[in-house]
Amino acid sequence: MVKIPEKRNEMLMKVEFYGHVRQYQNIQPEIDANMRGVLMSGQYVMGPMLKRFEEELARYHGLKHAVGVGNGTDAIWLALMALGIGPGDECITTTNTFFATAEAIWIAGATAVFVDSDPRTHCIDPARIEAAITPQTKAVVPVHLYGQCADMKAIRQIADKHKLYVIEDNAQAIGAKGDGFRIGELSDAATTSFIIQKNLGTFGDGGALVTNSDAIDRAVRRMRNHGSEKRSCHSYGFNSRLDDLHAAVLSAKLQHIDAGNDQRRKWAARYDAGLQGARNFTLPYATPGYRHVFHLYVIETKKPAQRDALIKYLADNGIDAKCHYPIAIHQQEGYPWGKSARIVGPIPNSERNAATCVSLPMFPELTEAEVDYVISKTLDWDRAQA
Ligand SMILES: Cc1ncc(COP(=O)(O)O)c(C=O)c1O
Image (cartoon, rainbow, N blue to C red; front, side, top):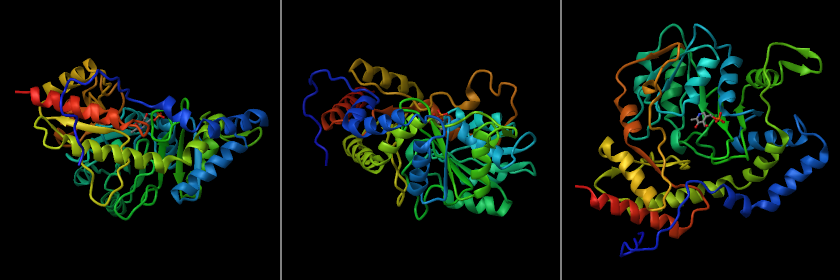
């Protein structure tokens, strides 16, 4: 049971949203040694460090292949293109995700088809998928939002029944597990992002795709490198490679990902215990039997009008809270920007999530005092509500 500081006149603390520098300081010798190795090797693009990291990442997932690419968005559209998905095809996903999920479908040239999310997990609601399937549907792109896997068993069943591909957008949940399934096990490929703020992040942009499919692996390897498998021989492709310096950072950090995720889970449990009983917001839902890795710890205010007020109250008290994501994709100005899109059924859960979500600071290097301070101030705000 968490003890909340008794009186609310603590000193004003500053609690950041991210702990990038703390993390670097904690494992600096390992990161520096890896980066120096690359610098001294003279091989910075498609070099031995990238190969090593790809092997480590594939092993970590228990899958045959990992391909490093420029960022998590590219990983998605490269996967879709590797499957031959393009204009005239439809991919089903949700609107309460980071914009990049939909963007990648559009970059591949396909139609983004949006269905509602589960009201508790905020991942795609499998019960909504079948109504959205047409003869043009080629793939489902579930997002493991906030660090928790979507219901992949249900999604796999639907995909098998309708002969659809499944690409997991795993930008937010590396190291998570489902109830009896691992990421990448029930899909054609899983993609991830290594932008710095992710659970496994580099000092800049990066991404990867993991798969058991030799064909997807080969196609993405070729496309990420100007359509080339050997020097001076090209087919249509792009430049989207993971630099060796980023691979060096990621290789060092990969050794610590499980410990970091465990620490996130510990802070989430502390938030849960400290904040339970609050009247004006609900706590994140962790599906029983799943390993939620809390990329984000997202509470939801009871009323939409309370969202920004809570964020402001926390900011006034030195706490950086954010919103993921405050405007659902279909509610963004200009939607769908001339791109092909369809919304199937009402999507109240996604819309409510967008209107009420507040992400509290969450990173492994938080201190107990910081977590307790966030709990204390969030409860202060809760008590002050009518
Ligand atoms: C769910 C989701 N999908 C895709 C991406 C895109 O990743 P990147 O920023 O590396 O392109 C992100 C994060 O940025 C994300 O959170």
